[in-house]
Image 1 (spheres, one colour):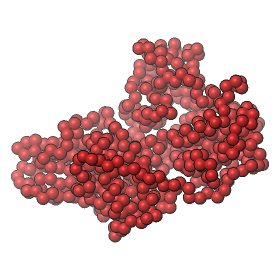
Image 2 (spheres, helix red, strand yellow; image 1 turned 180 degrees about the vertical axis):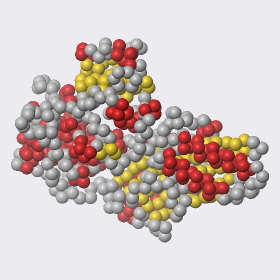
Image 3 (cartoon, one colour; image 1 turned 30 degrees about the vertical axis):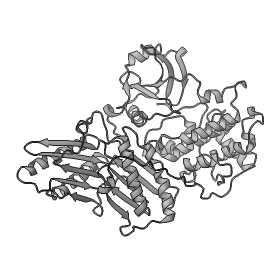
Image 4 (tube, rainbow, N blue to C red; image 1 turned 45 degrees about the vertical axis):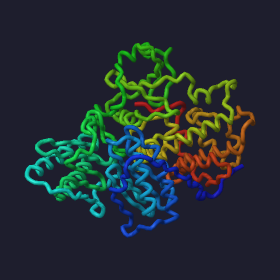
Length: 548
C-alpha cells in the first residue's frame, strides 16, 4: 500500500496577529522606506500572502540578547528572504514594537518583490534573493540631515572624534557602539552594523556612512545604509548603558555565516569547569558512572561538590583542530534553551580531555527505550507518532538561529547512520542535512531498528525499507513488536516521508515546514521517493561511530 501523489501547493497562510503597542511614539514617522523595484509602490495581492507568511515568525524570534532575525522561505517562486536588525540598546518590547510598525508600513506600501524600511530603532528588509552580505548600495543608502544650526569652530573636531571613536568601538564590539565627546560642546554618536556582516564589511559600511554624515553640516544627522546605521547629535539620544556594552572579550560578531575560530572566544556563554572537579565528580570516569556512548564521546554521571547531578561528556577527539571546530558549534547552540533540548551548562577545554557538562536527565533517552531487547516496555504507535510530530516541529537548531541556506564547511562529527552524503563526503552542512538526519530518525522510530545496528553482509535499515517500498510491501517494515496495534495509514506515511528525507540529492528532500504539514494533515498528498538512500552496508559498519 502506498499513499503518495503529486506534490501541490499546500502550506496555508496563517493570519499574523500584530501586537499593537499602546504607548510610545511612532518610529515610522522618521522612517525611510524604499520598495523594489524603485518604481513599484503597489501591493501585489498574491505576493502579499507570501509576505505575511514570511513575517509571521519574526516577532517570536526577538529575544533578550538577540535583537536581530534572519528568516527565509525558499519553497516559493520567487523565494522570500527577511532580515530584521534592531538597535542593540533597545529592549525586547521596543524592538518588537519597531518591527510591528515597520512591517505594517511595508505591507501597506510595497509587499511586492521586495522592500526595506529604516527607522531610528530598527531596519527591516525583505527581498526575493539572499542579501545577507550586502552592506553598501548607492541606490538606497541615504543620509538624513536634520534642520539644525550649522556647526562652527571646534564642533567639527569634536564630531570627527566622536564618529571615529564610535566606528572603532562598533567594529571591536561585535557591531554596536555608542560614544560621547563632552568638551566645550558635547557630541553623541551611535553605530550599529547588521549582524550578518563580518568586521571588514562593518568597518567599510560605517566609514562610508561617516563620510555622508560629515557633509550634513548640522548638529544632528543619521545615515541609513544597506549594512549599518550611524547617528550623531549634540543631544544625548541613548541611555548610559549603551556606552558600556561589553567589549570584544565578551561579545563576537554573531554572523550566521561565520564563527571566529579563536579559541578564547569560542564559548563565551559556556561557564568553565575545572577538569579536576569533573574528574572527581565522575569518579575518574569510572565505568559504573557511565550513562552511554555516542558518536562524539562517552557520557558519565557526575556529582559536583555543591551536590548538583550533571552529565559529563568526554569527547573522543582532542586535537586542537577538532576541538576548535567542535567548540565553534557549541558557541552557536550554547545560548539556546528549549523544552526538548538538554541544556548545556559548561565545559572544560584545558585538561587532557575536552569535556562538556549538561543538565542531568533522569529518564532514559529515546533510543534506550526504543531499541531495548525486551518486549515489556514497548512504545505504542500513538506514543511514537506523537514523538515524531514533536520532533518535527522543533527539529534543527537552524530554525532558532535563523535559516542559513548556504553550505557551511565543517569537520565530520556524529554517528555515521545519521549523516547526509553531502556532509559525510564534503563536510557541507545545510538545512537539508538536518532533514536527512530527521528522515533516518523517524524510520528508526517506525521500524524499531537502529540504522547502524545490522550484521555485516546485510542491508541497512534504510535500504531494507526502500526495498519494501519498491516491492509494495512497506507494511512489513513496521516494528513487529507492535503486533498490529497501530494506524497503518500513519505508519506508512511516516516511512514514506522518511524515505523522501534520506534521498541522496539535496534538491529532492522536502523542507522541515513541508514535513510538518505532511505529518499533521491526514489528507496531505506528496511525491513518492525517487532515489534510494545513500549509505550502504559497505560504508556503514556494525555499531561504527566516527572518532578521531
